[in-house]
Length: 277
Image (tube, rainbow, N blue to C red; front, side, top):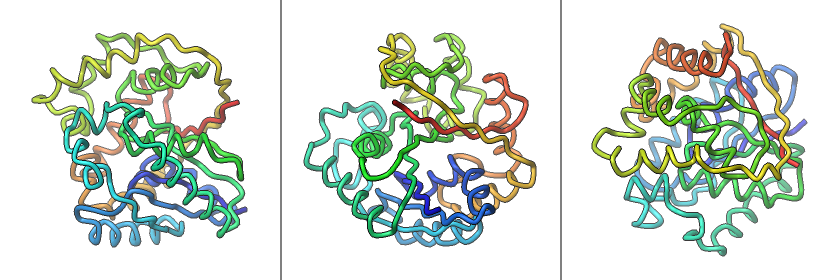
């Protein structure tokens, strides 16, 4: 089977689907990773990191070379706009362009299943990729939970509320979400202290949205083995320029991942994808 993981940026596929990739490769499937928004700052270095990471985990990487958000539109140099800007400000022509490029890629490579980001964490490029997934008609589509964003309790629930899903995910209060800011290494970079007065209220507000429950959700969960986690981190470690702000070492990767799993009621590392009807 030929499977494509659609990755908004270089590193998103391994961060979010590292176990899935290993399982499907071991089963004999051909796993392709297509990175959409790769052109811009440090693009040559990041492309080299991606090549190494793909070699370590056994997938085949492709780069579409669309501009990363801050490099294609000055508004996204603002942290608030980058993560909390409105989709209505994204031109329809650009959404159609990205969707068509992906459709063409799937046809060219004979893709039989595609995984797109759920866009938890709300980065504008993730939301654009998610919207493209909702428009795809040529192949079956699943949606993966974006890591490290979902580690922050409340992010997943907020996203399910936003898209109108009936998914049953842990309920989180505003106080719990705010209190968790100190518990995860990546949040010191994702929600920096000097930006919190501006961005935190908007993240918390997603918890108060009432889901329409129109999207009927089913999920598939993989439970990782210790060896799979080691292989996954070995691949992540190739992204030297990015991991310094996310998982600078294996211990941080394990600590933060399992801290999240405990809040979700799990005692093991789990990786989940969703199908919506």
